[in-house]
Length: 248
Ligand code: FE
Image (tube, rainbow, N blue to C red):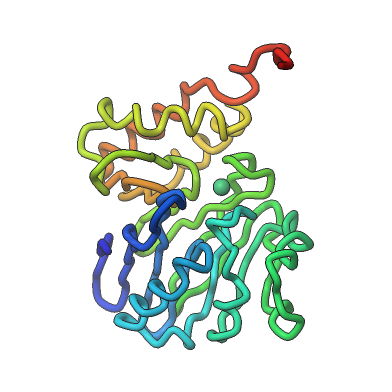
């Protein structure tokens, strides 16, 4: 667990050590302001129990106000039914995935508490503080959002900025860190056009920290800047793909 920001009533916590075994390492993020909170990308069933007990040290989980689901992958939302059953929270998910999430077993009496995020995004209030749900489509999912916390100035970037295999949770040396991000971005992000659309948005935000859903955070403005510059020039996805596959 890492506290990314703490000032007055506002606290941003990253749980980076709750995934186990063969599952891809994933971070779960909690934003608390006063007695309201948002949980981001809570993940699947094996994480659920640990996350619940960890969260209980910070707040009463039943009082959770929002669950943010950046996209449709299992490491994001497989345990959504459980979270909706034990909390009063409203979950937010791209309108594209609303008819897919029931396949994870969402009970009828909680499904009405999943709200569709329109393509252009929306703003939510957490104890009077603004959380912006920012469009980040095709990074990597077709219906994909990030959260910008205007108080902590943290951008929760979801799979963008994901890193795998390093043994630290805060980036220090950007050049050295690229090796842990490169393969993931080149294959999972479909097009550089999507990256460039994001860069335009990111450069207008006042960002202190970028916190991805996998791996290490970019913990200061200098590293945030370097990351955005890297994204701006990255070749990925279809652009790198051969015109045809050799069928075995
Ligand atoms: Fe994903």
